[in-house]
Amino acid sequence: MKLSSINTRYVINKTNKKGFEQFSQKQYALAFRTFAHVLSLDPTNKEAKIGLLLSDSALDFPEHASHLFDYYQILLNKTTKSKATAQILEILESMDKATFFLSSVFKSADTKKAEELDGILYQDFLKAVKSRSSFKTAFEDLMFSTRIIFVSKQEFYSFLQQLIENGFLDIGLEYIEHLREVYYDYELDEIITKALKNDHKKKHKLS
Image (cartoon, rainbow, N blue to C red; front, side, top):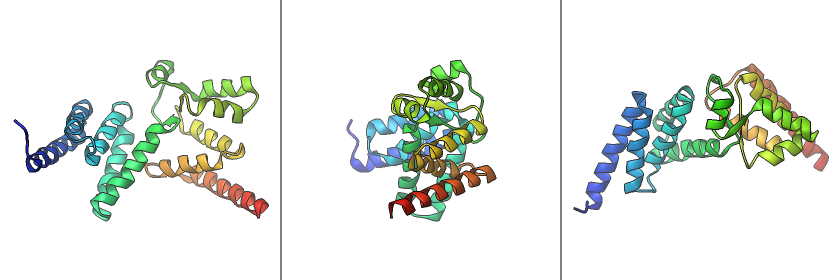
C-alpha cells in the first residue's frame, strides 16, 4: 500500500517525534534506527538527519551530544525552525568531518578506543610530529586521512596553540567556534585572543 504525501508527512513527523523522545530517554541506538527509518522514507528530511547525527554521536559521547541537543532546543525557541535546523546541521556535519572527537568533558580514551573510532591519540600524533620534525608536515599528512582523538582538555588546547603558531589560523578558529557552542572557559578565551592578534598581524603585513 502506497502512502499519500499527506500520510507520509504525518508518519515522518510522528516518527521523528518518537526518535527525539528515545534520544531524550538515552535510548541512542534505538533512536538511531528510528531516524534511519525516516531517512529511508525521505532522504532529504533534515530533522531526521539531525536526529541521526546526534544519536550516532551519543553512542560514543553522550554528554556532548546531549549538550548539542539542548542547544538545538534553544535555537528552536529563539529563531525559525528552518534557521535552527540549518545552524545545528552545519555544526553537526562540520564536526563529523573534522579531524577530532570531543565530548563536553573530554571523556577518557585509550588505544582500543582510538582504533574503534578510526583515529589516533594525540600523543601518537605528537610522535608523528617528532618523526617528521614539523607540526605543519605531520598535520597536513594526517588531516584528511584520520582523526585526532583527545583524552583531556589540555591536549586539545595544546593542539589549538600549535595550529595557530604553525599557520593554520583559520582551521584553529573554526575548531574554537564549534567548541564554543558546547564548552567555554578562560583558557579558551586566551587562545582566541592570541589567535585574533596573530590574524591582525598577518593582515597588517599584507596591507
